[in-house]
Image (cartoon, rainbow, N blue to C red; front, side, top):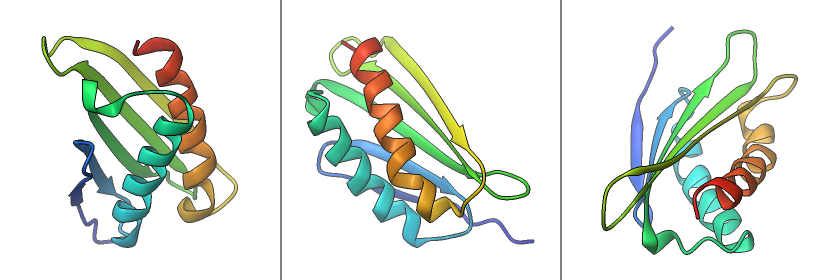
Length: 108
């Protein structure tokens, strides 16, 4: 099995590390994260956000996001969500939504 790591930077400075082997998930995750952060009232430009996607053994997806302050670089929150039972593509948007809700509560 070959693992691929792709990184994309969104205009809002969210870094997405994709360790799933599906290169297209990088852009999809960047878009989903930006959309969900906006929907949850997070001004992403105030934070440095680093997300990591990992495909789970046996199928599924895990997303980890670190949120630190842009000015002080102090860690504000660490969010981890995961689910099984479907492909990473199908799980991406619901998991990003859950992660963004958790960030909205913890990263302010």
